[in-house]
Amino acid sequence: MSEQKRPFGLWDKIGYMFGDFGNDFSFLFASNYLMVFYTKVLGLSGFVVGLLFMGARVVDAFTDVTMGRIVDYMKPAEDGRFRPWLRRMCIPVAVASTAMYLYFVRDWAYWAKIVYVVITYLLWSSFCYTAINIPYGSMASVISSHMKDRASLSTFRSIGASLAGLVIGVLVPLVVYDTDSAGNQIVLPARFTLTAVVFGVLAGSGRRFGRFCTDGHRIYIRCTGTDRCGSGTNLYGGNAAPRSLLSDRIPYYAIPVSFVQTRGGRKFGNFAGETSKIELTSKIELK
Image 1 (cartoon, rainbow, N blue to C red):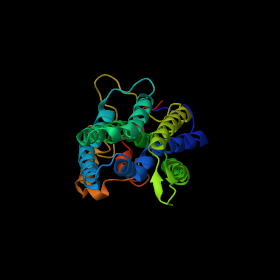
Image 2 (image 1 turned 30 degrees about the horizontal axis):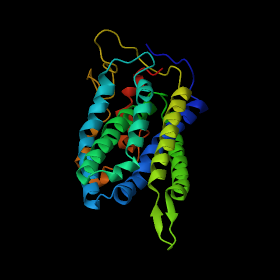
Image 3 (image 1 turned 45 degrees about the vertical axis):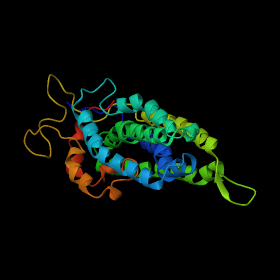
Image 4 (image 1 turned 180 degrees about the horizontal axis):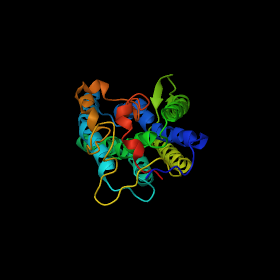
């Protein structure tokens, strides 16, 4: 049975924008400055850091697909199928992001620093960030059943990412860098940690605000018994069981790892264009 409690509107677009605004405070900060922190503050070699990033992308090939399957097959909570993950993971991903920038680790033994970066980076990138970004990206296909609305969500999401990128690009260099008496640029380790804490708070707040703005029922079919949401009539044809949005994109992860490091959430591709991939989830409950 289909239902629409509240029409799609500006609040949904703003809420979705703030979701990516929050996401990119942790993602873009890591993309632009994590290697600087690892090499300049912790003193790790670029080779070790490169191996870490490459290995994490391999792990992502499995955790991203697994998270997509979990979201598809778990029983929806009272507030829907996707939104609960924003509530559950907004704090863990903020804490995991902050934990990557603990400046006092520079005084540890070299092997201990390697163990530290492996654990904290994988915890953030392959588990916590994946657990919030996969459901967040999937929400675009259920907030509205109209392609025009979903296209506008993509536009507002890009605006949120651009705003976060502007803040990071302008403010971070002013905070984490300084100049010594000889005129050389130096890194301020303690300010890296402080900046990570501030961005963690902003990231969590942005996601919570985005979740609040998208509150309200959307087009859905309520599941009963042991049926999986989305089973029955769909554009895949027949009565095929639902498949993860990411499970259909497994070949994507077979390409060289240098192309897998995409901007936050772009792992989902173009929702507005991949009609056959999103129509299935447009009938999943979202409260």
